[in-house]
Amino acid sequence: FLRDPSPTSTSPYLASGHMSSLPKLEHAKTGRSSCRKCGEGIDAGELRVGIEAWVAGRVCDTWQHPQCALESCFLEACARSAGKCKATERAFAKGEVRLAMCTKDHKTYYSVGADAMGAALRPILDAVGADAFEVSDITGFLALTKTQRAEVETSVAAATCGRRSEASSF
Image (cartoon, rainbow, N blue to C red):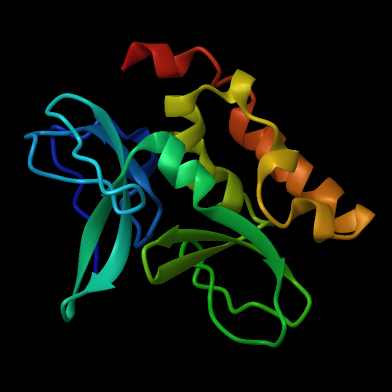
């Protein structure tokens, strides 16, 4: 499955052309979509975050308000060697830290290393404003070891470096 970014998409994160399941940021084309977290409508022209999920027997984009998408994220250490990073396709090792992005009952996981977590968070942080975001606000951050927290902070710093003014261009 190769994602073909639509010409109306404002997301620069999907233009690489390789298979990836990174969230995308775009202006809603119509007012028919609703947020999968809060259930409220997303007005035409309003920024929304698209996260791929398996719904009704197919893969489709599910939409959330940027702030709702950020609030739906959590960090965890893998309890066992299971699952793959949706950005890199690399399998998770037991004890490895991963970021989960939730959309109702579906969870999409991203590795903290290899810039996958940063690339996944980047469109959301662009929309909500990286200046207002604290990495310690992500659910599960404080439960991580000091070393794991440092790895997460490095990944988030790489995602926000030089990007703080780009959100205003939407």
